[in-house]
Every structure is written in C-alpha cells, then in structure tokens.
Amino acid sequence: MALVTASTKAEANASGEPPLEVQEWRRGLGFGSVRARIFAVNIVAVLMLAIMLVYIDAVRGRLLDERSAELAREASIIASLAAALPRTGRIETLAGLGFTRGTRLRLYGGDGALLADNWRRETVPRFKIDDPARRTWRRRSALFIDRALEGIAGLRAPPAYAEATPDLGSQWPEAAETIRSGTPVTNLRRARDGSLVLGAAATLPGTSAAGFSAAAPAVVHLTDSAEDISAILRAERLTSFWLFVAVTMLTLSLSFFLARTIVRPLRMLAIAAHRVRLGRSREVVVPRLPERRDEIGALARALSDMSLALRGQIDATEAFAADVAHELKNPLASMRSAVDTLDSVDAPALRERLMLVIRDDVARIDRLITDISDASRLDAELSRSRFELVDAAGLAAGLVDAYATAGLPRDLHVHIAPSSKPVMVQGDPVRLAQVMRNLIDNALSFSPAGGEVVVTVARAGREVRLSVADQGPGVPVENRGDVFRRFYSQRPEAEDFGRHSGLGLSIAASIAAAHGGHIHVSEGPEGRGAAFILSLPQA
Image 1 (cartoon, rainbow, N blue to C red):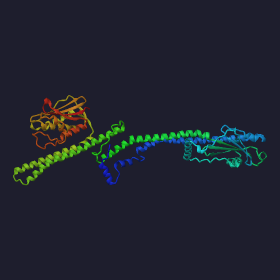
Image 2 (tube, rainbow, N blue to C red; image 1 turned 90 degrees about the horizontal axis):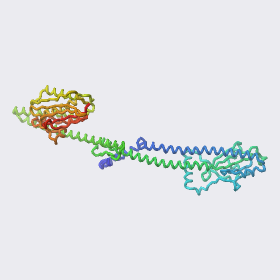
Image 3 (spheres, rainbow, N blue to C red; image 1 turned 60 degrees about the vertical axis):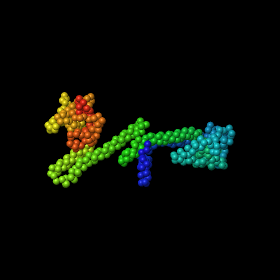
Image 4 (cartoon, rainbow, N blue to C red; image 1 turned 30 degrees about the horizontal axis):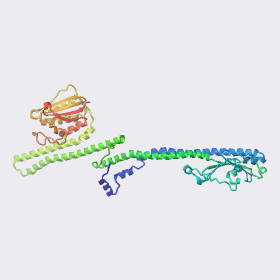
C-alpha cells in the first residue's frame, strides 16, 4: 500500500533530499532500532555456540597436557627399566618393545648416536602421518577449523614435526633439555598432515661412559601421535561448527522474519503518522493490516481509525469555518446596505427604520459570535469538566420555574410532569442545564400562541430520558437528522429573522455525546408537534 504519492516524491527529488521512506529507513538502521535489538537478542545463541567451540579447544589443551605427562612417565619408566637390564640385552629388549598406539621408542647413547629403534621391526605397531595430497574435503575443513579456532583463541602454533636427519639425539630439543635438567621433558609438534605429535625424553639413571662409551647419560626418546585426541575433539568441534553455522543461518532468518513482521509494519505506520503530522492527512492512507490479528494489527487499525477521526474533525472544522463566514456575511451585508443608504435619506421616520435594521444586525452578529465562541470552546471545556451526581428531575424543575417566573410571550406555558423521586445522572450540571434550556427555547420558538411545552423526566431501563414536547408544526421525518447540524436554517415563519444562530441544537447534541448520551426527535404526544428526547446513562 503506497504511503507516498508521486507529487511527494517529485518534491523530494526537486529539493535534493531523499524521499521520506528512505529517510525513515536510514533512521531505522541505528543501534537503537527494534531491528538492531532483535538481531542483538538472537545473536546470543550464536555467541554461546562460539564460546562452546572455544571451550572444546581448551579441553583439547588439557587432554594434551595429560597425554604429555603420561608419555613423560612412560619415558621415565622405560629409562629406569633399561638401566636395570643387563648391558648386553638392553638394546635388543628396547628395540622389541611395542605399544598399542604405535609409539616410537628410540634409545640414544651419550654421544647422541641411535642405539635402538623399535620401528625397525615390521611387527611393531606404528602411527601414520598421512600425505597432505590425499586429504578429503572433510579433513581439509576440519584442519581449517582447527587453524581458525587457534587463531581466535590466540594459541601459538606448535613447531613443525620432521624426522631427524641424520637420526641423532642432538636433533631433539627435549633430549638435550632432559640431559641438562635430569628430568623428563616433553614437546608438542604438528606433522605435515596437521596431526599433533608428542615427544618425550628421559635419561637412563646411573648410565655414563662406562655403559655407553660417552660422558653424557643415555636418553630414551618416545614419539607418539595425539591424533586420537584430535580426532575425537575434531569430530565434536566439526559437529559444533556446523551446528554453529546452522544456528547462525536460522538466527539470521528468524531475525529477518521478525524484522519483516514487526519492524516493517511499525515503520509503515510511523511514516504514515509522520505524514499526517505534516498536514498531509488527505494524501495518506494509513494501512489497516486486516490480515494481522495481533497487537500490531490492532495498532494499525487504531491509527487508521484515529486518522479518519482526525480527518473528519478537520473537515468539520473547515465546514464550521465556512458556515461561520456565511452566517456572518448576511448580517454584515444587511448592515452595510443600511449604512450606505443612511447618508442619502433625510426623512426622520426612514432614518429611524434604517437605524433599527442596523441595531438588529449588530445584535444578531453579537448573538452569533457568542454562540460560535461557546461552540468552539465546548470540546475543550467538556474535557476538563469534573462530572458529579446530578438530579435531572430537580434540575429540570428548577429551569421550568425560572421560565414561569420570567414570563413568556404569546401566552406560552412551560410545565414539567411530576417525578416521584430523584433521577440521578453523572454529569456537569451547568452543561446539562444548557442542554435543557436549548431544548426548551427551541420548543418555545416553534409553539403557537397560547401553546404549552411539557417537560418530562423518567427512567427507561438503564437510561434517564428527558423529553421536551411542544405543540408546533413538528419536524418532518426527512429533516430530523438535519436539525442537529450547525447553522440549520429552518425556522418558524412568525419568528423575526436572525433571532437564533442555528447552533443551539448542535451544541446540545455535542454536550449529550460528551456525557455518553444522545438526542433524537420524534412526534409529540397524540401525533402533534415535536418531542426532543435527551437520553443519558443512569447513575
């Protein structure tokens, strides 16, 4: 549903500024927007998965530390065993040792020369280092994730693993370190296929040049693959990574869905409200979103109804202004004509008649302005009024007594039907009295000479009804809705022109509506005259 017309777009392009939708769209991209908050809330799940991936890497570090400590203990035990073996069978025994994981055992003499290597026997299990050229896609993606997470966690990449050439003890830093410190030493390296390789070295206790023809002690060196640990954690990490990707995609999809179903209609409504505020209410169609049965749909329909009510109020104000101008124009034209004629008239009687016309026109304008002022202030005053319990029957009886005391022309009479007990309503007594006076004045103006106006107050279910009936000509059925319009001009023939402004019944209807009631007109008793009935909620 378009909210901006072509003329508005043309105005925007002519001024060099982007259209209103673009301005609002850009404004909605800030970090304080609902869209940003939706993404921020939904991204929490993604961050939790990312933390889990880093935690898995921390678990891998602990497992590697435990494996390194285990390998160091094995190296120390094997060194102690080798030292306890007879010198003649020591090398043969170590060369024949086999390990479940395929650990490589090497014995270096004090001069660094290789004395024993259990991998030289074909029957000993061995761990393997794969050829990088034969990596599968899954293997390459797992290694990429390893590198990425190590970079994110800030882990230092281990040195590359390469076989010593020539195979001497001095080629292994852990061997030199264990000779210097006398304690088992471990080291972590990464093979060319990405797998981790652990190295551990321990000196043979009590060995010297006498045992191995060198001044330095002999060294047992173990090389073991940590690929089993990496494989387990890599499988978990790969699963977690793809879960992370899936959750990220789902989160983004949900965020876009929520942004589309929440943010977009709200922005449409905001743009429409903004354009109404700029005074373009006639150009704007506020979307009602009839397919939405949630709070946003209710908000859209409420805003649409509000804009329609505002448009109606504006139309009523414009119509009222036009009616005021029309009503003021008539007496002003009459007064101007009389004033222009007055200068050219010498006869005293004619001049007196012209002055009488001028006085009547001034009085008419004064009455009209008073009623217009009262009508324009009515809504504001009613919104500030404090309602109280009012005895409608007593209020009507007091007004009827006031009319009887003041005396009425043409032998007119006002009577009120007796009420057995108070009839209470909630309202502003001053405004309710104004409604009753307007109804009684209207009835008196249409009553024939010697006629009677009868006021009745009674309960009718949950309502209180006040009826003002006259003996006049009545109101035709087709005009019964028009009599409550402002400046309705149908007046009795015997009434002097300009005695009423045509606002009395309109003001009375507005006051009744503000009190939760209404006024309607029907035939009077016995089908004679008219009866104006004010209905109000009973207190």
